[in-house]
Image (cartoon, rainbow, N blue to C red):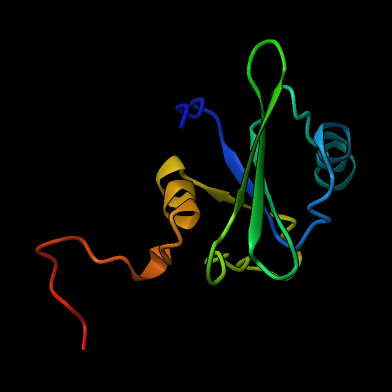
Length: 116
């Protein structure tokens, strides 16, 4: 996978119609989040079932979409801290863990003490 740019990554706080493509997703970023999808970050959308994810970002001269469907199970989608949050800001590492199907709050570093 291509390395993500060093800009913020935002996960939508609720499900999105995953059939949407470049124009509808970038329009959702403008309308619902009040941000410019060509400047402000990388945007992650998921469907209601949590089985599909689309990642939208602008790479200097055009939009890119990464689209992934889980073969089994669901993506571990984090929940917003506040009910009023429209997005969840995350790191590239957190996004890559979600795309790998790993529930990142439960990840324990090798050599870390385990909590019983």
